[in-house]
Amino acid sequence: MSVPPGGRLWPEHWAVQADLEADRIQHRLNIATARDLTPSEMEARAAVEHHVTEARTACRSAGRFGRRGMLDRWRGASVERAYLHLHSAKIFLVDVLPEPEFAAIVPEVATRLGQALGRNDPRRVEGERALQTSTGPVRRAAVKQAMEIAYDASDEEYTRLRDFRNIIVLAAAAITLLTGLLIFFVAQTPDAVPMCFDPAVTAPPDAGQAVTAVAPNVCPRGAPLRPGRADILIISGLGALGGALGALIAIRRLRGTSTPYSVSTALAVLKVPSGALTAIIGMLLLAGGFVPGLTNLDSQRQILAYALLFGLAQHLVTRVADNRAQQLMDNIPSKDPEAKPAEPPVAMPSAPPAPPTDPPGEVAAAPVEATGEFLPPQEVDGLVDELKKTDEELEIEEFPLRPEEPDEFPDDDGDPEVGDEELAQTGTDRGVG
Image 1 (cartoon, rainbow, N blue to C red):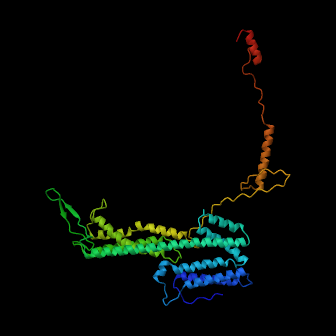
Image 2: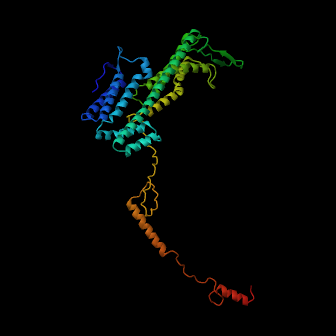
C-alpha cells in the first residue's frame, strides 16, 4: 500500500480534485486486490500504486512556499503531471478489477471515447467495435487501448487550452504596456495628440451672408480649455470602463468549466486594456474626420459618451478570441449535462465472411447477397400470399377475349359485310383494281 507523500496540498481546486481522485483509485485498488493475485496482477498493482503516489506528489508543495510559482502556472507542469499519472493509474487498474466492476466501466469508456474523438475517426469506430464484439482478455486489452486513446486526446485538448490561455495573457500584457506608454507620452505633451475638438458654428448675419465663427475648444475636461494632461486619462479611463462592461457581457455567454486554466479570467483581462486603446483610437478618428457623416463633437458630454461607446466596441475585435475559447472548451470531455454530447459514429462496413468450403462431390448452392436488413416473419408470409394470389389471377385472366361487335357498315341488302377475299374477288369481277 502506498504511503501518502508529505507536503501541503496546493490551495487550488484542481489539486483538491486530483488528490481526491488518487484516494478513490487507491481504495478501489485495495478492494480489488484483497485476494490472491497472479504475477501479472501484482505488477499491475505496483504500477497503479506508483502512479497514485506521483499524482499525490504533484498536488503538494515541497518547499516553504504554500503557492505555486508563476513559471509553474505558466507551463502547467504540476497540473499535467498530476493528471497524466492519474490517467495511467486508471489504465493499469483495469488489469486487477473483478469481472462485475470491469463490465460496469465499459459504457463509461465508450462514452469518453465518443467525446474525445470525432464521429468519423477510424480509431473511435474500431475501438467501439472491439468493445462490443470482443470477450475475455481481449476485451480488457480493448478497454485499456480505448482509455489510452481517449486520455491522450483529452490531454492534447487541455494543452491547446493552456497555450491559448498563455497567448491571451501575452496579448493583454502587450496591449497594456503599449497603451500605458501612449498615455504617458501624451500626458507629457498634450498638444502632440490633442483630445479636444474645435467645432465650427455658422451664424447668418444681418447682411444675409454666412460668416463662420470658431467656437472655443471642447475638451474631455470641459470648455473652453486647451489640451491638458488629464484629457488622455479621462478618455482611456472611460474606454477601460466600457471594456470591463463588455467583458461581463462576453463572459456571461461562456460555459463554465472545471479546468485548471482560467481562460475566462484571461479574456476579461484582455478586454479592459483593449477598451482603453479602442477609445483613444476612436476619438482620434473622429477628430481627424475619418468617419463619414460624423462632425466634430461640440460638448463635453458627447466626448465622454463616445469614449465609453468606443471602449464597449472593443467586443467587435475580441469576440474572435471568445468564439475560439468556447470552441476549445466544448472539445474537452466533460460530465456537464450542458456540454456538447458525443455524436454517433458512422458505421464502417465490415469485411464479408469467407464462404464455407463445400465437400467434394456436392454442388455449391448459389450465393445469396446479404443486405444486412431482414423483414419480420409476418411481413414475409404476407408478401408470399400476395404473390401467389397475383400469379393465380394472371393465369386465369391472362388475355381476356373481347365480345364480338355488330357490323357497323352492313351491305345494302342487309347481309353482313363480306370478308377480305370475297371483296377482292367481287371487285375483280366488276372490273375494279
